[in-house]
Amino acid sequence: MFADPAVLGYDPSIVKGKLGRYIKVAGDRYDIEETLFISDVIRGRGTVCWRVRRGEKVLVIKDTWADDSRDVTEAEILQQAAGVVGVPRVVAAEDVEVNGVSDTENLRSNLPGFADLLQLIEKRTHVRLVLDPYGHPLVTFKTRKELISALLDVVKVHEDLWKARILHRDISVNNILLVNPDDIPPPRPSKPVAGVASPESDLPPTPRDEAALVSSSDSSGPPPPYDEAAPVHSSTSSGAPLRKGLLIDVDYALVFGPNGERGAVARGHRTGTLPFMAMEVLMLGKDLPKHEPRHDLESLFYVLFWICIHYAGPGGVERQNFDIHESILRTWVNGDSYDAIGQSKGFALTGNPRFWTGRVLPCLAPYFEPLKPCLTEWRQLIANDTLDYETLSKMLEGTLSSLDDNEDWSRKDDPEGYGPERKSSNKMKRKLVPIVEGAEDDDEDDDDEKDKDYRPPKTSRRPNGKSAARSAPPELSTGRVTRGSAN
Image (cartoon, rainbow, N blue to C red; front, side, top):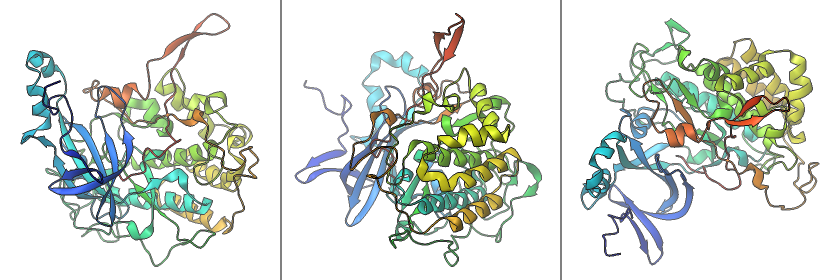
């Protein structure tokens, strides 16, 4: 009771003042307005995100314990991606110190009796990032047009990241935010990751063709910004401008060298968030030659499909009459192995089209009926192995043109039985956390990256008496804003 609070683990850099809590990063004060996310694992990165304010500017602070074995930090990747429009901008970054000493060393120095044990545990550095802009979850889209427009934005962002030698590898519903157009940070000069050539030099070969270079209209400089002169649609049915899609969380991104070689950040053979992982990534795992851009574009398909089956309409309104674990799609999230889940997806996407139209598409909420042609065409691109940036962009632009400008959906009249302002169901309050799995680093971040996502199978009994593996489902938190930030 008489110990220094810092020794007990309290963070003295978070101060409670007369007007509320505030935090200092790199010497600047930020007033904390809301806690957006708190990691609930005992051992892991311990990530916390806050919505903060500095003057009139609303920003996000991401506080995490980064594994020192990762040679490239998230801040460094974002700095290399500074020329890309549609990713967060790093306002400030620092390693947290307590009483002038690294927070890591401060905590470990107070555990002298555990020196041998500490040598066996990965070393982590307490870091903070101030990120711009603050955004809202993708599921809070206002119209179908805003949803598709945001996904089209993400395709462009992903392509520009690829041109900057960065492959995201963790496309999920939680890693795409909606941001007002005026809040999107403009492109800035890039700072290449140490040991990786500047994006101003030659572009990396595509993983599918080592001899070919990624095409670019201007390979002598950073990727161009969005073409604001030719938007397909610019406003919602209410006349408000469509919000832009922001791609966040580059923690597990892959950074390529000038000749296409993988950078030091390439840790995992199988990386992603389970429901959104591409079939090949799930089935091949360590035998996957390379994680390619098309795998992320397939993950984006699952993002749209996930929203269409779990939500009744715009504004994050969850369906009350659908549970994926009791549907034909249960094998997309539950299975004996990653391979089994990948094969289940493959059967739906590359198998008999009648199964897709007769069993899979009926799972969509009625509000998303106009998006069935989009999903079907996207599925066909995956099945034909013709999924690329240009083809997908044209397909999504065509979908935008086909959608009505006016929507008459209302929560009260929804056919799935909500009524006015009914509270959301608790059954959707499940969390989705990324997986990172590799041969040489099986224990890396296993609590918050592997064990929480795909838990060891539990044994159950089938009616025939044989044992069946049953894995606990991944969890998704959608009842409150847990990722409404540029983290």
